[in-house]
Amino acid sequence: MVDFSGITLTKVSEKEVGSIASFEISPLPKGYGNTLGNAMRRVMLSSLEGAAITSVRINNLTHEYTTIPGVKQNVLDIVLRLKNVRVKMEGKETSSVMTLNKKGKGVIKAKDLVVAKGVEIVNADYVIAEITDDSTSLNLEAIVEKGVGYKRADESLRDEIGRIPVDTIFSPVRLVEFTVLPARKGSQADLDKVMMTITTDGTVSPEDAIAQSGAILRSFFGQAAVVFGSELNEETSTEAVTMTDWKVSELGVDAKTITKLEAAKIETLAEVAAQPKTFYSKDLKLTAKQVKELSELLDQYNLGFAKNAKKSKKA
Image (cartoon, rainbow, N blue to C red; front, side, top):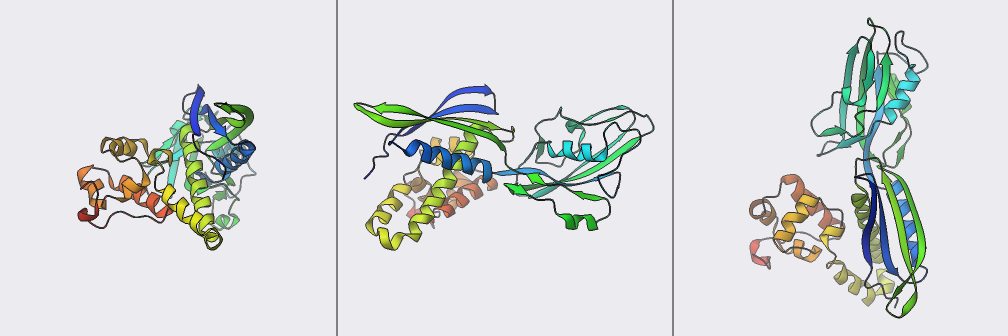
């Protein structure tokens, strides 16, 4: 059996706070550097949830191949610039509306967009357009949605007069680079280590991106183990037991939730599942959103909260 014990993840540098950071993952068995690096890179670029503009309405124009008198950019330029507005959405809502009503000369930036509660524009100083005439008005409505990966423009939206669909990249991760280097552990020198640099758009931190990708891979391979369970027999059972010992802090859970869990000496999946749901809402004072996050995490691994306080090891 290949030895996977002792693997650590360490942040080694940070170029821009919240956007670019480098990590070292080691020591890995020989050959597993590329296996892990490629898997995490693909997941981070394709499977993390983000938010982006999916359609816009500009001065009720029927298509993007036109100009607006008194505006420096044509409509297509404005649409392309709106695609680069980076949006962060909190809460349960899966879509929201941003609006802008501007008249008179001036540069229009992303921060001029009026957003709903729970929506934040990260690149607030990004220039969207410039009005060059005092009598010109620019009225804009943009639909923001949550999603994963890439979404082609929904051309059926053109049936709504003035609505212009936008092809969208939801991924909050912009670039993942990794290098596999030699590593050693004690007298064993034929090991790998992965040096990975992650660049995000600022809506998630590199730390959250790598944690979420790790959680997705764990979930995927956990389900794969179930599929091959009839062949794995005892090995599958052993893996299931080990899975409950995974630390919650490494599974992409909100940092504020982690702080409260650690204060209550709850660190692993098994310890989370050992408590009833009311323990988290009443005793730890977690918000409904935080409790739901824990519930969804347990669901991923076919676990659940204890049914009542009597089943809780800590109650």
